[in-house]
Image (cartoon, rainbow, N blue to C red):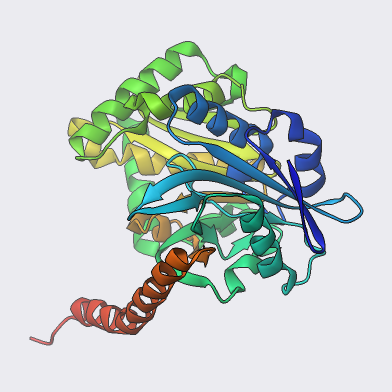
Length: 375
């Protein structure tokens, strides 16, 4: 189905398998993350269809000459009695629509309205967890009036043009020294080894061991393991088996005397690497910090291999700062279509305003709590 929206022609699809050429023409590191690659999107939409979780809607926007200029990957949902289009799904850390870099910023709201007009029976479009910038430049969509800063951030480590020493010395001195001591201690008391495999080079035995360790470590930390959730686990297993097109899964491993004590899973597309699922042994191994050792080895592996960026993804864990990562602001945006959607949008804007007022107070309170009082 194609509908005209003034300057724009909007095509609505329920899958992306046949859109690989359009993806290749439009999507790159300048306007997307590996989560918006064709291969990753295809796996997510296939999983949604397999489990009847949501009704996917892909809006491909073309200019009048037929050139692809925007892509919106969305899911229908019902929340608070309203009909929503959502860009988020649990495996997708970044959920940004993709825009051609030749567009003017003023074009973006018009394109959103054209997309909303092309999809019947919805009240709102909600875009969540959009990064402030991509590897190749800023994300213009976070500057539209309907966007707001999330409290959550992402963390990236630039690798391009940096030596191993430059990457390591960017870390706080105390963290650097502690990690070096623990690495040396492990190497002195055990036969320490690091390895990393990509796509179909990953061995089945490592996939099984990673899943087992991931389940154990998340349970010990009181967290939910997405690999045990049937509605999503096949996406990761397919990536581990190399079924993601140009988006490939990778798995790094740290062993002691041949025993795996930490795994780290992620995806890569082009020259950008994202780390998403860590797993490490606790108990007697905890003093060695095997998970942090593995992060360090994995970062150096990809730096030496010539990748541009190591993305530690969303979540404000302290270890991401300690690795010298730069904070990347995340945004969400809400666009109403109907009267009911407009009423909800006004309430949302009120929440955003209150959140913005309270943020400086929360930051001041956090800073005050870190100040050591004189004795």
